[in-house]
Image (cartoon, rainbow, N blue to C red; front, top):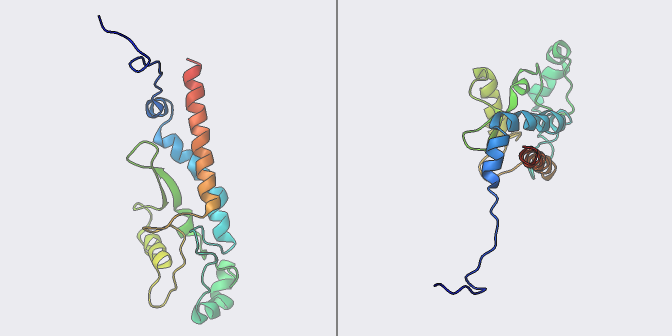
Amino acid sequence: MKKFTSKTLDVTWAYDLKKTLQENFSNRQWAKLSQYVVDQQILKDLSKGNSPVNKARRLANYSERYTKAIKGSLGKKNNKSVRPVNLTLTGSMLSNYDSRPGEDTFEITVGIHSDAPEFDRLKASVHNTGNKTTPRRPFVPMAGESFTRKITLEIRKLFAYCLDQAINRRKNR
């Protein structure tokens, strides 16, 4: 007969959080909720000329040539002003900025995705990375970067909400 001591006695309960989340929340639901952050935080910041990328602050000014074009017919035709620099001329590029489910549980991708029109993807790449004639205007974090603290906090709040909903759904079964 085996002798039980306090060292061999284990009174524990395991809670499989990952399983609970998978059973009660899909990536599609997570992406739909995170679209709120895209619409209410990221795009609003961009409309004010602020980068949603941590440590980037304001978006770089337009070139002299582009500023002249905006002050001329280009600006009048598209109701565009020189300030703020907001990555919006026609609105087509930023209309493709969204949140989508990723491959793994609770993974999302945020930005201009591969099914956006090619010209919008090209504009997004040039603005986000910069080139010889266009300064970098980061609006999607690149490798080693993250969103601002405010945006990251909103994403965490959404995750906490999802977690709360998943646990409550399980309790009510």
